[in-house]
Length: 390
Image 1: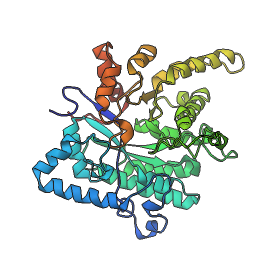
Image 2: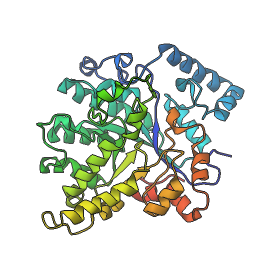
Image 3: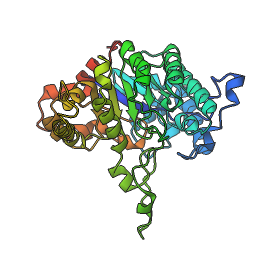
Image 4: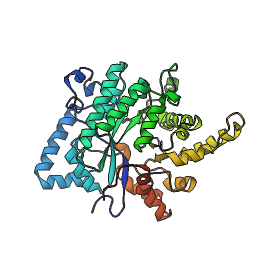
């Protein structure tokens, strides 16, 4: 029996715990010059000892079925060294992990490799890094149609380079890419500027949703540093989530602003099939946001008349992955059955030690048809051209 049991599940958010040579192994000699070592990025700590143990555990479980069975049984043990978890960094091992999970498809995103390249202040290094990262992700997922590779395109490089990188990402095997939700330069064009329409058209024409993911936000910080001067001890959380409890409260601020701009500046309406997934921003804030959009629309109806309510565009074009532990049943009652989708965040510890059990508990009493839509139906209709493997 798989972890999914008799459920159809499509997982919209999973990750790698990459080895330190993940990018360098696919880079050309000229590209490698622009890449910094993975353990030099400062966003997430890298343990070379843990990486070496992960390599050893992969060899051991491939050589011994009994060892493999132990790793299968403990694949959601979030206390385990993350590089040692099933499918963390080896593509064949990840395929086996999907067999054990029983998921029909899974969007696969980077972890350390994203941070390795995304914070460079050098535009050329950022461009080359994104190109290499997307190639590596495409190659990792190439041999298993259940794995949908998610790359990264920094829109801050401008629409021309971003468009080129997006074309290359698709050609190199990425199903879609993450994009930043914020332009850090106050003098730069908004991502909703018509100059970016060719980028959005590529997603629409390709019939794939773009990905908005926590930490992929153009260095946006909603919490003033002064809040840390509170006379209390640090409340660092760890992982790729915001690093304080107050940051967790504000984690949706950037994506809320981005989506509001995309809707109110009518970008979605200019591109009929443009749509997006919001991952690891939670979903408890979404009902209030929809009401806020329509309040703004009503208040500004004379100065900025709209053909359709802004909330209607959001319901049509955006899907949200709630955290395991959020009140998903209540959210379905507030939002309807169509806007939410399942995410495991595997093998990140934020996904919890048993995401299905947490979601099931939160959906007690909800119509089984709505539960099925949460696990697979909503995102199956949203993924576009890719076919579900059954």
